[in-house]
Length: 103
Image (tube, rainbow, N blue to C red; front, side, top):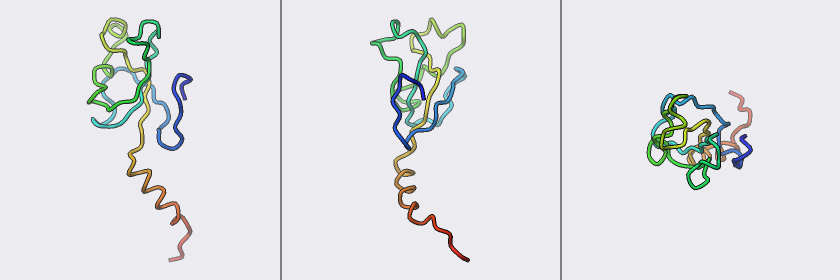
């Protein structure tokens, strides 16, 4: 876990490093993103945020070493994916059925 971001147990994947090569998750995925950009130069002091990939977090996925300091959007350096609420509900429902069944 990155020290600048809080952990929500069970709902988030681990942190994944991003190389700037484009959107690594399907559009519509809820993600938390982190930029290692200098916080003093970050817009409104924000270096991490939660949003929807490809909807409200778009341009930051694309960067190169040459462009990362000059582009308008803060470059995403790492991200994590929030598990869909439906999967969390299914896991809770199935938790009671995780007993060995003799066939």
